Image (cartoon, rainbow, N blue to C red):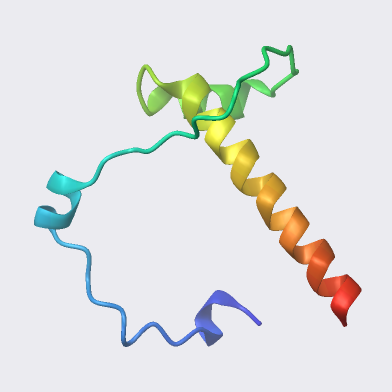
Length: 78
C-alpha cells in the first residue's frame, strides 16, 4: 500500500487555530545519555527546526522503536 492508496477524505484539514493550540509533548520516561554518530545532513535538518533538536531526535527514535515493535507483533500474529 502506498500513501496515495490511503483514503484521507474524512480527516478535517489542520487549521491555524489547531496549530496555535498545539503543544509538543515529550516523553517523561528517564533519559539515558548516549553518543550516536549521525550523518551531517540529518543533524543539520534537526538543528534547522530549532533549539530543541536533541529532544526531537529522541522523540523520532522513540516513534521508530514503537513502530518496529508494532510491526514485529503484527508479523508474529500473522
